Image 1 (cartoon, rainbow, N blue to C red):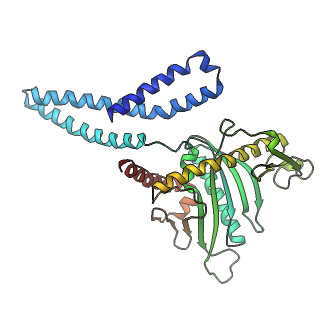
Image 2: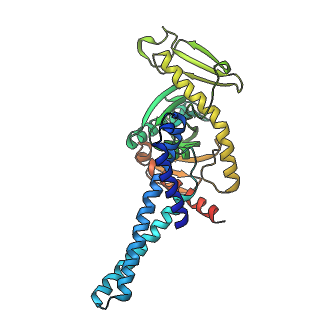
Image 3: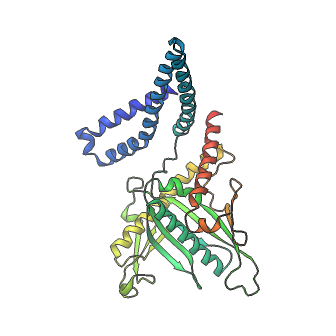
Length: 357
């Protein structure tokens, strides 16, 4: 492992030197790629430096233990060796996980699409509950959310809502939310107090930047129309809403959140770029999934991943058979991290097992 860490350290230093070269600094695309690589390697380098320091301290303590005649000094040295050995083993496990190739999209922003499924009006209300949960979770994480498009439900919530989340390693956290979310509760419209089951699907896409996908203007048909959603006085009076159709793939994206047509176009282009990019990214997920029979994040949108049972205040994640009895905290965004941490831990265990096979 030390040889591998030293090679990574050499690569990290080489990237640092390249980033200061005048030719690289003027090549924006290459400079951005190098900056991304440098940033991703930095945590490994910091762990390597801590690991190297611990090894040196263990060697020094062992030298005292084997050569010092003073019994008190030998006792202190033995305690230090024992403590540092535990820390060394913990750090080795941490580094092993770091050395597993990461999903190349983890550091990207995310585009979230929530759609009401089975359950009629109650499904739309639940889709709205999920949207508020993710917005609150994003606020707790210090991420920024931006609405892209929505279709409101008949009695509340949303039939569909699309929004961006921007921040550090957003996709690496939010990707675990892709799939079908099921709710069991008594709807407000239920007169006899019976528990109904409804569902909403969540799709999480890594936000593609302009370097990931080369979109040609000739391949895109742009239509504008009057906005029907939020937007103040501009609603239904100006052609601010945008609909983009990617002719080669047939993908259609709409955005009417902003008063400005320019801003709506910018958001719509981002979503369109990400949906096209996702088709290639899905091939990566399929390839990885075929190698791991129990992979946590397969990208399968039809998979039922989680159930929210209100009468029992229970949330069950079916991928890792985890049940928590803090539904209210989760719906307020506070308990979401506990679910994601458990899913990440399970996936890391799978990845370590796969790496050892």
